Length: 264
Image (cartoon, rainbow, N blue to C red; front, side):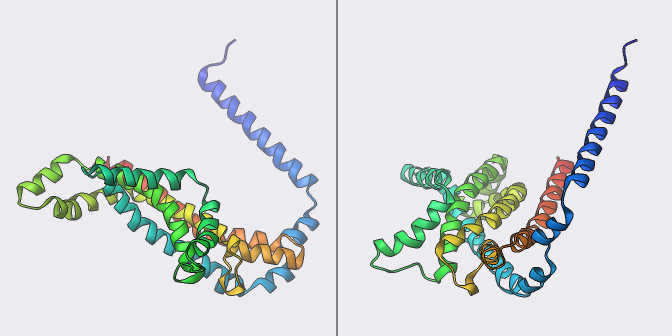
């Protein structure tokens, strides 16, 4: 006798539960938990990493990300407006910048700004040292992606909003700043928060700059600890610190998306 679709779905779920249970059991039996704890959660090494992992590495990661996101958001807005401009050269220039920084790996951008700028300008670096270099290099990569997000958000605002503002005597620029852009940012807030998460992880590329201890971010700090203790505990600790930043942001994104979905 053939099973009903509901019965087949139920049997399928039971099979999936069984497969998962077997996989977990195999891991529990096969894994060398003593070695895993020693290599990933060594208490002595964890203790040695504090408080520097918080006061230096985590703090610098947040600062680098905040600087890059702020720069990228402002420059991304400018690029988005240039992409929507009626002036052809503005559109072409903005398109060139967006396509270049979206198409080139962020690591190459870091290397270019860290070592290319001094070569091109007689040894002069960007102001602000490492923070300035990270802000501009990572911010440009983020701006290229945020520009397209912002442009899509502006185009998603009904054209009647702009026309109504113009009928009230507002100039094009005033209507864009006061009416259109605030509505666009409410639409694109979730993807912008996702971009903040990506910038947080991409800030790990700062290691190519050759940092001093006071400039370490989480990945550099973990890499240095790995070479010092020959254990994966510092790397694991760095990963957990990244999660302290990214998991709350991910939760915020999901809630904003759910609220936007309910509103629609």
